Length: 254
Image (tube, rainbow, N blue to C red; front, side, top):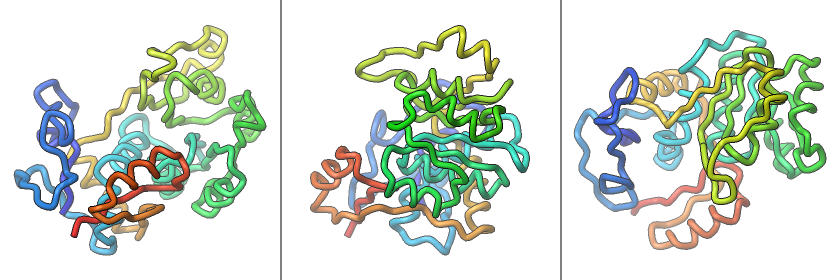
């Protein structure tokens, strides 16, 4: 079993009375024992290890909701995802599962190879191509991406919009950063895409269960970068903060 991110959000749209979440208004999960209401626990696929299952409630559900919560993806559509965090890697796997072509970004040649091994059809080096939105358009024959999973918000939204196809969907996961407190998009960029920008914040129990059915059917496993012991929590956080990880950093209890 795994706990849901929003224990009170079972299905449908989230409402203010369902915002409580572990680690914020409720006790978190970095503990040896936790007590959950039965509605706040979901059975995870049997083929996963506990460490792999621990990757699902936040990054996995957010990626699944991003891809399935709006206008349906059709086989052959193009999905753009940014970076090599756990959520982006889930997007690569899920988008391929849904029949999409995937464009990913990174500045690391080694990580680019690993993205391709996961299924990314194209990888754009954003350090070599600062105007990487144009590079995405070039790779898609000038059309752009049908769905963009925007994981960096203010830092990258302009290029994400420039990479988007006409009437594309842009899933916005972050709306502020220490350097830029809000989202700014130039008129020139937006006028060229007319994209629908959709805010996603993890997902409901129903999203979690739907994702698990897909994982069982396809046998997909999350990408775990490193596993730390319960007494190595500080080291785990420092490693995560370094940005070196490719996939999830997990703390094993017991």
